[in-house]
Image 1 (cartoon, one colour):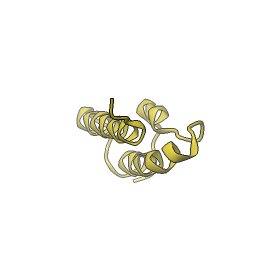
Image 2: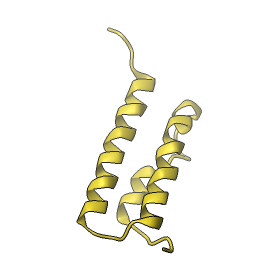
Image 3: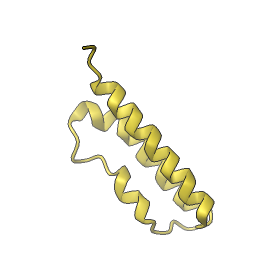
Length: 68
């Protein structure tokens, strides 16, 4: 299946991030594009991308986490 555009992909861009956050975000970017390129567009794909986005956000927060 050829890659299709999906509005959710904008949230997986990482080039604007600081270097240490790029590293963790790049993996999620790659997987998001793989999902869009291989899974038909439907509500479940959107849910998959949304949950992947939640996981990416958690991973980024884990990198910048500080004990108080």
